[in-house]
Length: 116
Ligand code: AMP
Ligand code: ZN
Picture 1 (tube, rainbow, N blue to C red):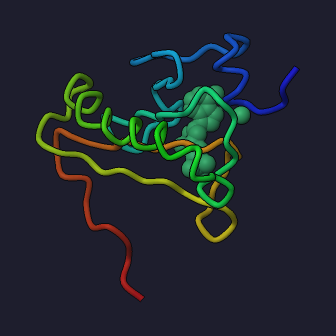
Picture 2 (spheres, protein in one colour; picture 1 turned 45 degrees about the vertical axis):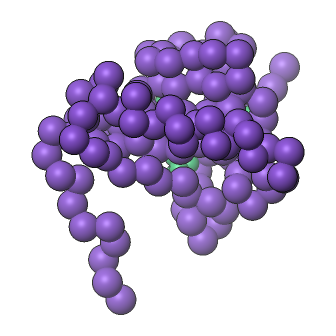
Picture 3 (cartoon, rainbow, N blue to C red; picture 1 turned 90 degrees about the vertical axis):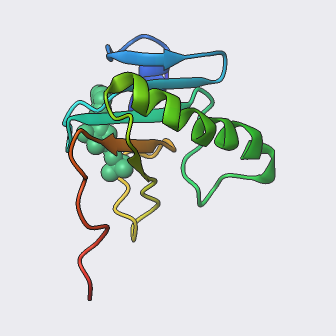
């Protein structure tokens, strides 16, 4: 049994509001949304982060990004969105299973980061 919370969602052991699924990718609503549209897209295979991803992971990572516009549009953000991939300690990554945040509309999500 996995102690990774997102692997447990993939296994169906923890509920999630799924918005997209195929054989290697799952997307579901963030439990604590930061914007009206806030979807997490994950590989079903456990990859800890972009810091541990390998060249073999490139196809699924590319597919995740290529799905983002479709998911954002279907979920109510048809005029653009932001992708965030927090990575490791410096990136403030909380869940150690690689995920992309899709955050979006209807209003602009705001400035990227506070300037130094
Ligand atoms: P990060 O800081 O990039 O690792 O983001 C982790 C995200 O996972 C946060 O936005 C959490 O709200 C979200 N999250 C944690 N547990 C769950 C869950 N069980 N279902 C959906 N989203 C979750
Ligand atoms: Zn996992």
